[in-house]
Length: 246
Image (cartoon, rainbow, N blue to C red):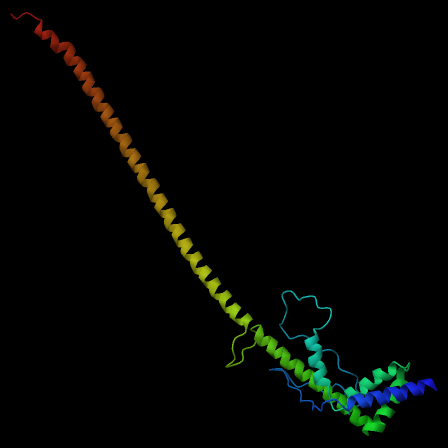
């Protein structure tokens, strides 16, 4: 039948392609600092673990709109999942290949497993253990990336490591804020000095104006008195020269 021909071709192409895959051993998961190791997500009879929650206390100011991962991240993940062709990643690839032939559901996974086991000799338990190992590799890599991210944004300090650009900018921002606060304090002190000087100036001007007013009054009084006496003297004394002597 055509479907078995397609399955045979898919399996043949799959294993020929897998012969050129580089062998890679999945690393053990690396937990984040202060967190307990995660339990296996693909243990016997257990469903896949849900997506891990974001870091506690990490709230991005404005998360950029990302509709798909960058190719460099896709290549990195594919590198983590690149095994020796005898692991769960290779089995999943075979499932996807056979799915193109029209198989779905239990028949798809069972048929793919029988074809896969015929070549690799893996039992179901070994296959699922391989899935757990790959999941741990992904989780361990994610923890390392999150740790580097925490270090990059200044939430985590790793001794003897060069500060990231964000940490350097945070330090510069703090210094500028401190400088601005000091300048603001100095400006406030100068403003108070200016107000005190202006108040003292106003008081001195008032004193000077009051002294001038007092002087003007005294001067005007003296001038009026002098003029009155002058008028009287002129009126009474000048007549002495015209009065006959006895």
